[in-house]
Length: 260
Image 1 (tube, rainbow, N blue to C red):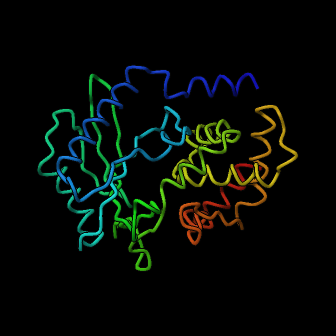
Image 2 (image 1 turned 90 degrees about the vertical axis):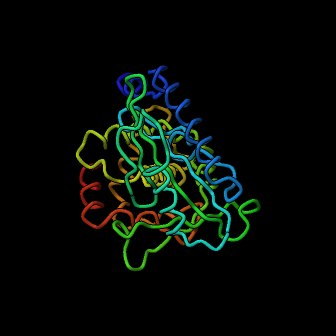
């Protein structure tokens, strides 16, 4: 238990105050630049990802920024390409190291600011019907990473953030699993998967949750070992999205063995 507490402390993203302040300053600059560029065609730009959900670790961290576009006749692909082209051709920032880089649903940007490496994922989305009332977005899926059946993803990032943030009892275990996976050779799985399966383990063991940090971690490891190959993990932002499908059978089998 003492060792796990030290792991949590040493991987706290707030440990490097200069870096987290650099992230906040660059985030503000990015939001201002995007708001000025896209103006009335977008809603309020907001934080998403593990930082917003308080499950981030400092050994593998980037900051996600979501841009909700209004319906204006443009396709999801056009919106995605417009944001990409803006960073490639117009956005001027001498701190920009690499990028933009096209990813599955986001656009990656890497900065060096005051000697600090800052990684950002910019996620463009378009409202499904009425974003101000339901917060639902469609996200374009870059064809390089998607499939013929996966041209877009419908989700609700606000619901995802609220779901993870509301389960504070699971937060430390999520962070410990991220640290472990990041050092185990199987770190490619999505943070969202780790968050959902940890919360599911807590829910399915309700009334029998251990008190110590190690026993809680052991409970979740046992749960993953026994359940991961057949589990369904429904996206709280869109119930017909099974997040367990982000892992293939080989990855699930490997994870089950490592947790055993």
